[in-house]
Image 1 (tube, rainbow, N blue to C red):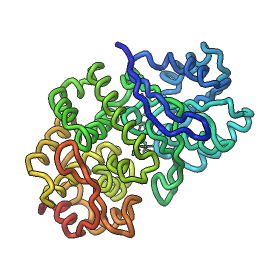
Image 2: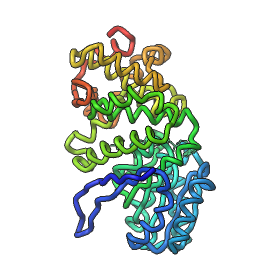
Image 3: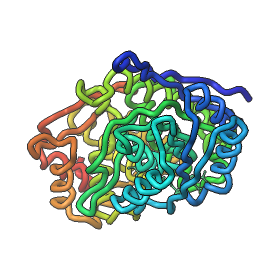
Image 4: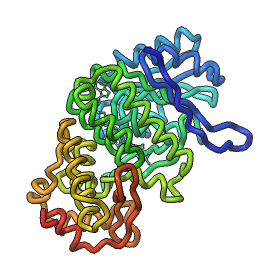
Length: 371
Ligand code: NAD
Ligand code: GLY
């Protein structure tokens, strides 16, 4: 199967072109070395999730070696706990011990945890090194590796420290997903469905028609969903790189509810995509309650999510939690303004809007299944 390229078009900076390509397909890992050489790199530091360092990470290192790059490998323990200041310091020190200079590029191999962490290391070490993402989870291939959001967590909250730092390129090799645990794979599908609801009715139709192939991780189906999702993310990032116009905020469809479910249940109970699925189910119900969409669309979205193996019964989840606690978390959400509730809500399939000032009681009714 061939690979395809998606361009993330960005304005230049002091004469340097910041636009970059996302390669999607099979055999893409073998192209990492030649691409770094073409970009002027002389050395590479491969920062890899320990779970994939000896499989996909090794193939990346082989490509870099074959291209003639001097390569250093640093592994990072799997899991959200690695998105921490202590890990940042460990990696900064490793770079300084290796006398890394500006012709050294970082290559991040793993899921969103590694991409966010290694991206932030690249953004900050010697005030900026080139970074390339080799995403090995579905979440990372369709979302986190694209768009330059990097960062770490604090004990007081997720993703509170970070920077925008665009990669030089992204290599989404669908073969890497073969080793991904099924639950992680299905969780990533929530973000894929999200693109259909927020921007692309035809893609939503396609997902409905091919749900069996998708769940079976058929290579052609995977290729299609990663390519289309990458195009959507690339277009949104190109038009609103720093989330200033409100366009990029539409990527947070379902996320206000999702963050509340994740936080109130203790991070780790739900995978992020599972929480997003519950959150999209709740957001659609809220949109329906506000008269913005018909009940048929709520049911259609529920059906697709459930058929893809994703959870949708947010009322059952909320029943075990306190509605007031969930509302309080939503008010503290980074996207809330002065504590006012703000949601991304559909007006029809393929189109959403940012809606401010929704009454807390309306949200409570939705959470309690009274809508
Ligand atoms: P993750 O990076 O924790 O990976 C999930 C699990 O899969 C880990 O246990 C990892 O070791 C394992 N793994 C990774 N690739 C594998 C493979 N090919 N085979 C076997 N196991 C593999 O989680 P994730 O879902 O990829 O990313 C979640 C993170 O991404 C969160 O920290 C979230 O905040 C962040 N995120 C960032 C953005 C952004 O725009 N920067 C967007 C969405 C999510
Ligand atoms: N994942 C949301 C964003 O990149 O803006």
